[in-house]
Length: 39
Image (cartoon, rainbow, N blue to C red; front, side):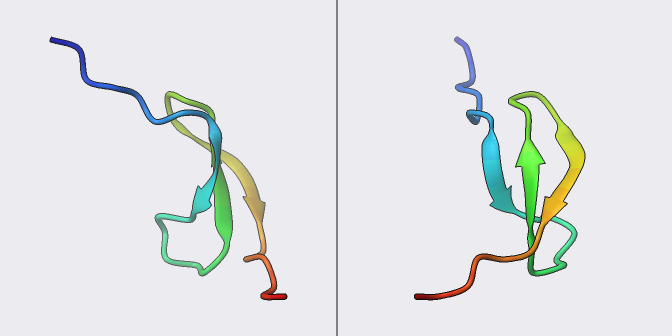
């Protein structure tokens, strides 16, 4: 049985910085962005 992989994309930074970090589908990258502002 295969474990489904999380698709690549921007997610909450697991470091707890409050921003976002890019997951490339296999590992976290060094690309970070501030948290999106509420409308």
